[in-house]
Length: 295
Image 1 (cartoon, one colour):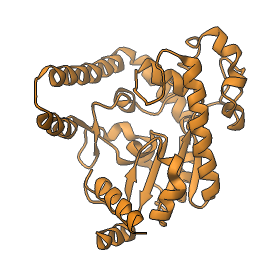
Image 2 (image 1 turned 180 degrees about the vertical axis):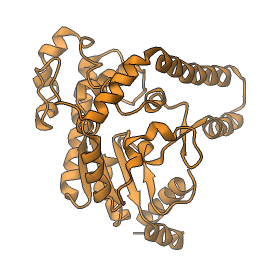
Image 3 (image 1 turned 60 degrees about the vertical axis):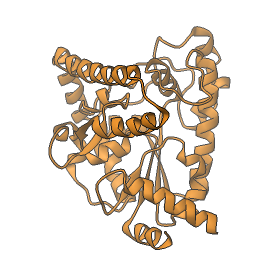
């Protein structure tokens, strides 16, 4: 009991101090849902959102963007797909144990293709009033009232775009043929989550008119958006190079990492930051008060 209280207080401290004060605090951490039953025991008023995506797209994104994840070999699609299956199965099982009032699974493809009905469902689950701004997050990038999105995050160059279908099938044609052939046995969670492991390319459905328009506009202004993407990527790489090349002591290393994270942010809309990962955990004000008293 004492240890659980200490863990809860520490977790609240990290989340609360990571941004501006807010009635609801959100934590985006892809692997938190593997412990969501325990987290719910610490924060009984919290709700969990499990973002589900085609594992082939997830693995291709991890490998192509060189996202370091413990236990995943970025040179081996087969191994990464097995790891994805194990991780998502654990998260899905935890979500099922919590039940639909506490944990909501949301398919990424459905969110992209049908953003308004999906977001209405999600906001209702979180007891948040509907606001159409969640459909146009790109208009709030860099505007006052947004939140800081780290330029060091490898998906930032995509988040600056309006909701579109470009990323849905980027993985097609990049996975080795032998891995594609063995997909049903390599990643059985694809079938469990409603995906066709043999469909290549898959048919996720027809997008809503807003998404069709956004995707068309991106193609028409392709050079402009590519330039914006390059600008974000080049700035991120420049920051990392300058940071890595500077000699420092161990203490300076720890301090500079924190300073680097705090000084390299771009503005974006609050809710988009929350939903573009695998997990969002919401903690309301009563949880914060109780956590402070525990401290």
